[in-house]
Image (tube, rainbow, N blue to C red):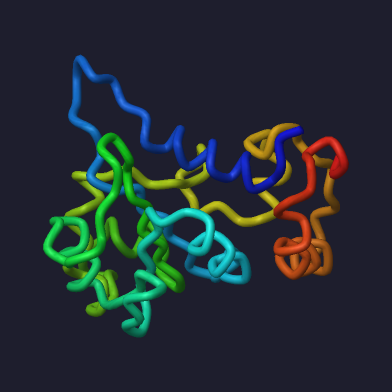
Length: 175
């Protein structure tokens, strides 16, 4: 059956969907993660899916760099960084909230050059417009079947900590 990893990729693909009669394809999917809830699985995502670009210290092997570097990669100006036709790259922004990108006065200087991409791209976010948390994703049905999780801080922390171990588990085993 479908795994949590499969569900995550499907959800990201839905974020890139658009009405071809009304709009152009998004330039990128912006994945804001102010609280860094998803950071533990980032190496696994990067290993399995080359469309991920990550804001952080420069490391070309990990497709990671500054906002300027990401902007150049999205523009096709970085040798070796490309995607198959029709693929929408994902830009993971650890420590950055969607709200900070939306209000330029609050936008961290190190990501300011990416703020315009919110108009040319799409956000991967909860239907309420906030960053996805691990527990919100697991409870939403986006993961395949909504899980019934406690709402306390210990459960939230456990969900984040166990995410790497859950990634390859079939959704049916988690319910």
